[in-house]
Length: 366
Ligand SMILES: [Fe+2]
Image 1 (cartoon, rainbow, N blue to C red):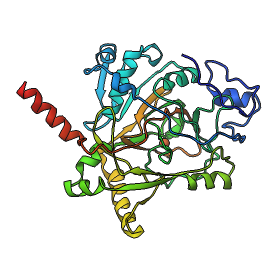
Image 2 (image 1 turned 30 degrees about the vertical axis):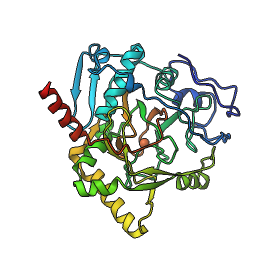
Image 3 (image 1 turned 45 degrees about the horizontal axis):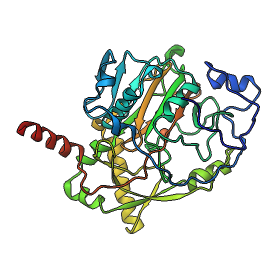
Image 4 (image 1 turned 90 degrees about the vertical axis):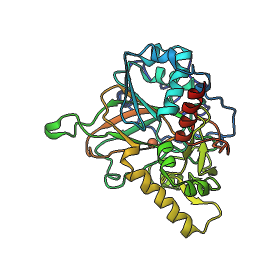
């Protein structure tokens, strides 16, 4: 494995991230801004082919699951923690199984992962072409990494957590997405490590909780996802813009290509309107769905980070939000996001519950 080809015109072409060190230290040590917002231009994204690695998984995911020392389902609906493996030691069949497990469970967690940022990029690139953010700060020589970074200068956000799916305005938004946290906030009483948990919610579970009539209606709908507001904010503040910002129409309900299950695909950050409904009516519908995401505690998992813990989630079938309860403390992690397929709804696909019920009945008749 090697790193993807670097785009042209990267800022600070002389800079190289050293191995085994958090870029949080090494970039600043070199006298550069971190994250770095120096503008550079990228071509607009065009559709590219994608085959999900999870489609090559063993039906029982036995390559992966035979290697772990424990598997803990953190809630019935979403979230599984694996122990006893290092991601860097996984072979391709194990990575395929991991993709299928993430697709089914929404998010998979691993603690104490011994991988530096180069290895993280190489690992994530196995699952798809790595997304480069349209406006966020970057590590100067590793633009595929999205630094998750807040310190004492982060004054907004405390009262405004927004559930979202990452960069859903793209033609091919990310599927499996990987975040490794290396610096945790000391926001606890007496300066102890606490704060900055992340919550995920299951799109499958939320979708199947809705009434059949509402589901049937949602399946007829498409929504506009927009990157314009984010781009405008970048230009207003200290950010930069690398591509022309876009708006994309996606189905409100999409089918996951690996599980074949239907999932709800709208989010408060980027979904601006339902196509073909009066704005007033579409907004009420969206708001109802956003409230279901935010208030459906039975569809959620809350993860407490430890240094070098990794979360791998599926942006197609989950929503997430970080909890900003640690101002003015420092929290830092690195996200890498392989792009997946263009969202689609297969009219013959099922909800997760329907599909699992059918599978059980088939097994009974065998
Ligand atoms: Fe996010």
